[in-house]
Amino acid sequence: MTTVPVPCPPNLAPENRKAWTEACRLRQHIWGRAVFLRGIVEFSNHCRQNCLYCGLRRDNTSLVRYRMTPEAVFAGATRIKQLGFGTIVLQAGEDPEFPAETVAALVRRIKAELGLAVTLSLGEWDTRAYTLWREAGADRYLLKLETADAALYARLRPGKKLEERLAALGSLAALDYETGSGLITGLPGETEAALRRGLDLLASLQPDMVSLSPFTPHPATPLGNQPTDSPEANLRALALARIAMPTAHIPVTSALGLHGDTVRLAALEVADVLMPSLTPSEVRGAYAIYPGKNTDSQDPEQRAAAFAPLLLAAGFTLPPGPGGAWRKT
Ligand code: SAH
Ligand code: SF4
Image 1 (cartoon, rainbow, N blue to C red):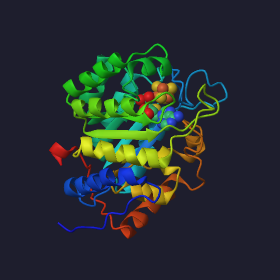
Image 2: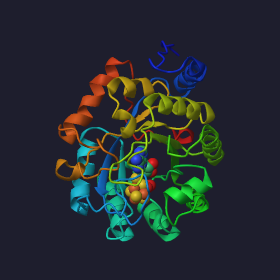
Image 3: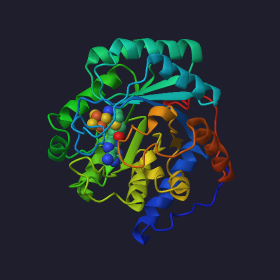
Image 4: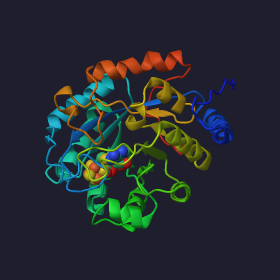
């Protein structure tokens, strides 16, 4: 195996450098220089939930809502296939008007006609829906804990409980989905102890993928005046996640990507997945979970295609295929 120099992110505090170096070593050991690209289509910004941190929350009346047709989502999947990606991620708010049967039919068609691996990130539904989608061929499901602090969880997700989230993840694992979970780092009220507990809890669930997005306040939410989690704090959390879960896929989230390509490339020294948005230009700006998301002016294909030269120049490789879980890779 070739050894590569391991650059530390420029602003990482000296006390975090040991963890960073160890996380880089583990990333190199497990995934080499591979970066796995997944194309994401965010097909609806309607949501029945009211998460205090999220711009799609139902009480955000200033948001223009959209819902793509199944045909338009399939067209997005076709573009993802044409770009050479092996996986599509279908993400949305919890939208009851996009019924479980419609999602299942879409998954079935994507599997049959395009052969892509399908990841769903659609929030919390009943076991019937998870079963339907799994039977239709969905391979993976991403459902983040957001925080492992039960009191904070209940406060930030009105009407919801952490134990229900854990039960949902249990159902998904029982249905043999490859599971992804994760946290929002730097949530208002999150302590260092809660972050550590969150990582321990995630590790105990043995997820195939772990996503940590830095909290990025949206002005039209109750947390709009709270501070953004710094990129350095998020990079440190990514390093701790790699150490806690060496074989997990770890994406560089679009929220971290807002801080620029230097930060994105630094993050890929411990993370190994990028998920460019292929949501069509006409609606993508309205998928405003936080400000800045999906606001670049390039069309989705241009942006997705621009990743490859940047990554290759930084010495990464882009393996073809679905890039499944460690145990299946
Ligand atoms: N409705 C689904 C999927 C869409 S939300 C769900 O909730 O699972 C996708 C992710 O966006 C959430 O899991 C959350 O971690 C992240 N997110 C929401 N608001 C955020 C914010 N203000 N800053 C950073 N990440 C955020
Ligand atoms: Fe809806 Fe997901 Fe946003 Fe919560 S985080 S409001 S479930 S889109």
